[in-house]
Length: 81
Image (cartoon, rainbow, N blue to C red; front, top):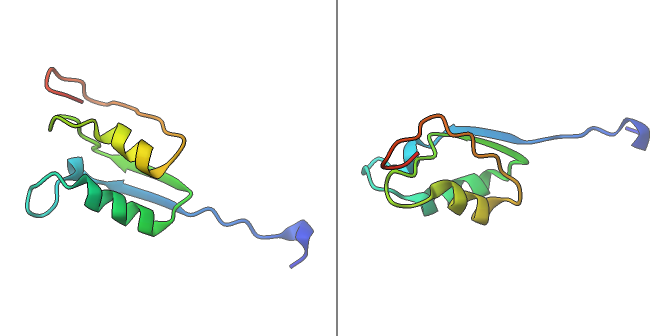
């Protein structure tokens, strides 16, 4: 394939992380971060990034995984988003 017609591949990942709760119902952001990093995606779309457990999970994910992020809150409550 010539340079003029080079193929561009963009890897995407979409995942409902359910507030980073694992099967044991514990908040395990580090485990979620490791799996996302392993996917080596260019674009990541996460659902249910929950902050009601006392941690700002979105900020943690952004800090550890990428330079750019958009936080689109769908629910805002007194105990978190």
